Length: 200
Image (tube, rainbow, N blue to C red; front, side, top):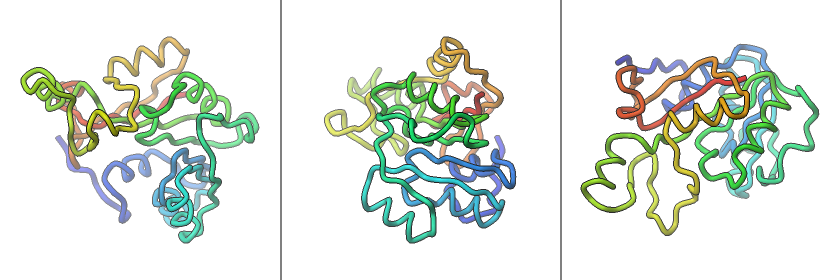
């Protein structure tokens, strides 16, 4: 297992996404939060793009970073963007909270040449242990909510997501899995808490 190399002041999960995006790309970041990823891409890789975010405080924080951010609900889709408007679209730790997962994936495929999707892996061994032995829904660093207040409505594993991609004719170009700040290569569906996919 290798440590994630940091070339920017980003969280380790955002650093991995950053590393997958080529210089000078146009990027659409869905659920961009405070705009940290887009700010780093602009500063270090000369990328341009937009962020979409629904939370007002996060929108204001992104604007303070100089990010082009639009306050919008992803459930409404991406109809304001033309086909192939971007090189890359990013959906980081958000897909599990979407009502219509297949619709957002199709929209991502429409507006960009490639997509990067990340999500917490429900198949992670600690999650399985909490259900199997504890008899309760898992709470962890990547899923820090109780069952009654979680925004996560679709729990999935790596295998579930890969089947979803196959069912929707999405090609997986690259996969990475992390636990904490470390990359996982052995038994990723069991030992990885966060999954990363680059798809087209």
